[in-house]
Image (cartoon, rainbow, N blue to C red; front, side, top):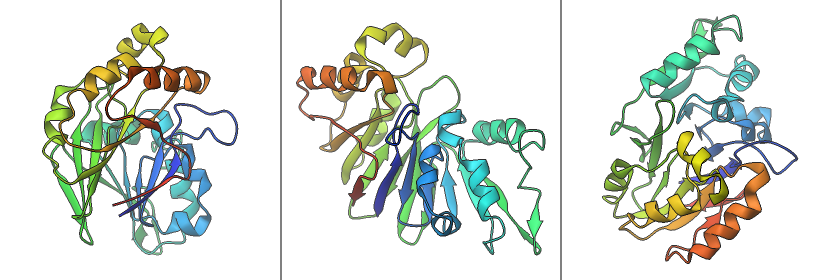
Length: 255
């Protein structure tokens, strides 16, 4: 599997700050933040599946525009996978005819444009020898992370989350884990805000990584734009054995 980072910021502001979206091979998206705007029309039209971690805007902002842009270029619906509560939020508050057309109700040349596909924690989706499984996350709204497994290796994306023992109990079972992408949204000076908003800061990250029992390259995502340097400096000062690195736009991870 090949993952291309389209966006990995916790906000916007300049060309390098695009919100969360990962392109898996050429046909799967993990989240649909503003990073999707890096794709050409043809690349967007090739996407068959979108896996959403949760309903917050920075993770779904480009989804309505992408669906609209490719609706007449495809011969089958775009499948939108997410937890049932997340799909209901998207259906009620975005694709509701008031904010945006409900493309799950629209057909072009007799073919549906978009289809919702509920997924639950522990449930796997398999496509062409690739397996994507929802893993536990703990956030202010119902949320999941995702485990991407090629058979030869795997990657876990935490999504937005705070301290969560279930997450570690789950991923410590993945013997072929190669990459862990985990959020750290705030610096330690904002620890009260991190806790209230159910995000991580470097001190909380350190406590969480101490629960990781399998080797992996660790990448940090979702840094708030005004705190990037402070967050990464504090992470460097932790001296953690995993030596986390900052995830970068256009980075490629293969496994």
